[in-house]
Figure 1: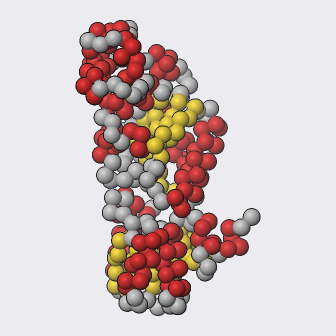
Figure 2 (figure 1 turned 180 degrees about the vertical axis):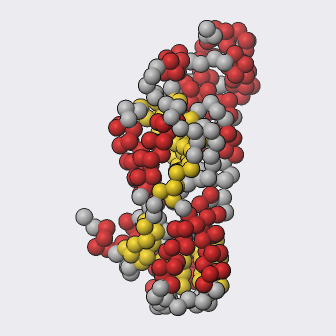
Figure 3 (figure 1 turned 60 degrees about the vertical axis):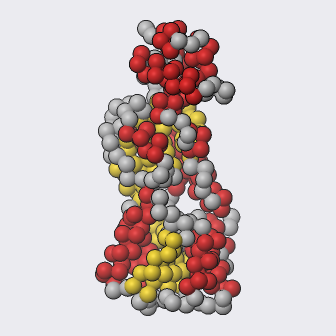
Length: 329
């Protein structure tokens, strides 16, 4: 069996140095890390704790990898994700470690694999992944771990995705609004270009344009309440209705319209409780973030046990009108 001494010999370093690299200690040069990781890869070295877990019938430890670059006002979504994931992990007797994308963003694939193995991680769930996280996207292509991605259409034999139908959800909320609102020009507040969910949501708006004959004015507000306000002030009143790709932007738009003393119908997307404090009742897409996270962890457990191959799981959404009384306890 390959041991840490074999790795040290192959890399030409001390055993203590290999241990530091495996456990992600600071103050180790990049050149040394590369040598050690190369030796680990060539020899197929697995730290003892991981080897024990791999030989066990228990699923082992999983990681929840969160995107820590989101706006603070929507931390509610991440907290619901965490709550759902932890409930399901306890139910399945899975040990959990929580990591953040920023912790591994600048590491190489080999370094991330070594780090996760040193933490006894056998699989992970990724929340909030964006299109420009190149290293994470490459990691998802490997077969070293079982993976589940929330809100990104990335599927292979060892990777599943869990989300709602973004196109259908965006279409449904606008179609609901158009039952009572006459709108020929719709101002659409879009999120960031690097967001996977925006592809589906924009497709939903295009479907509305084709079927209802509406003109869609797409403006990027990057999921930011502040930027949504700026768009509203800049666009004046050149539209009949505002559709937002997130509740946070919808709140920014509604507040700006109120300050301008202008009435326009506004709808959002997500169903966060903050919508109830916007001052006016608004229609939105409600996603059950706890259920999404529970489903993701359950799917990861099935992948770890070899019961499933990677697949897409689409969960239901709901169109609701939210007001203050809906969110207070």
